[in-house]
Image (cartoon, rainbow, N blue to C red; front, side, top):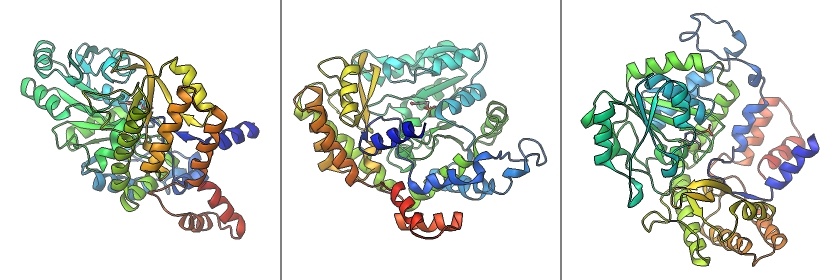
Amino acid sequence: MLEIVGDHERKMASAVNLIPSENLLTPAARLAYLSDAYSRYFFDEREVFGKWSFQGGSIVGEVQREVLVPLVQKVTGARHVDVRGISGLNAMTVALAAFGARDRVTITVPPRHGGHPATAVVAGHFGHRAEALPFRDEAWWEVDLPALAELVARTDPALVYVDQATALVPLDLAGVIRTVKEVSPGTHVHADTSHINAFVWSGLFGQPLDLGADSYGGSTHKTFAGPHKALLLTNDDAVSDKLTSVAVNLVSHHHVSDVVALAIAMVEFAECGGVDYAQAVLANAAAFARALADAGPGVQDAGGVLTRTHQVWYEPAGDPHRISERLFDAGIVVNPYNPLPSTGRLGIRMGLNEATKLGFGEPEMAELAGLLHGVAVDRIAVAEAGERVAAMRQAARPAYCFSEDVVASKLRELTGASGAGVDELAAWLYR
Ligand SMILES: Cc1ncc(COP(=O)(O)O)c(C=O)c1O
């Protein structure tokens, strides 16, 4: 079995991952998983049992109360933070259960316009009547606000759940909130920012609560480079109470090592250039899209804009699955996705978030785009591209995070170990 895991390690250490939903967990955050905390439950006694019943997690749980929650409040400006979500879909399930209502309408973004494929399905499991957020026929990326006003007036939705997963440009969240609240002030608006949390938390994209959303949140491992987990945020006391009462029953234990890893990732975001990282992701995505478009046809756009997010979409001349497999063999890991909203069919969805977390900039974007195009059109041999990608990846190190020295010293502190082995392990984590 270790041979298989080793094969994975070797492959990913010589590949560049462009899957927009994934990111690198930094070496410092990975230290969280060495602790015994992984095996413990942490329940906040005030919210669940009234008294401690699972004492094993009582010490490490302080990280949630003393570090993670205050830091998230500071970074996001939100008054209430729920850290129970174990993934974006889990947080989505909690939010749908808390804010939607049986036999009432929940409006979601249809997958054809970039919505998450599970949202309407999960809403249906809770007995909601799912309706699609309307988009303009002539511009698939623009919400049809007059049609939305009409839909809200006609259906009196309990919840509008704005779940943009596949996006070249962020949708007009301010316009959606304004339109919904004008017609129906009592309708709850929740923004699922799973894909764009690094941009929201760095202030580059509008903060949903400032724009008038009742709540928002999502995954912490896509553009935000943390562990697989999710946050839900609100400024409203009653909304927070509702969220908590639902979350404690839909999430049993929310994985205390993930809490610690997320706290470390948040500290790194605040102290190691989180805003610079988020800006670099946007710049890299734009540079990569431009270089790929210069190399040949197939790069998608939204009204002439190649990208204003971390994502770049590509329709290769040939079967996207087959080409993705060839790219994987060449060390370029991409995401065949159906449908790309720009075409309504299968294509290739990419994100430059993890490549940016590896410290890549414009020169690497140009080189990667050239290699990707060359492999996709069969102009560069897979083996040759693979060697060049491996050289790029092996020269890179995790960036916007604590240094190798810091991680080596924390490893000594945590384990009591000393000697050259600690430095070797820190170097391995940094490869
Ligand atoms: C808007 C949205 N919500 C939820 C999810 C699911 O997140 P996770 O994969 O963390 O469960 C995604 C994933 O792409 C998403 O884009």
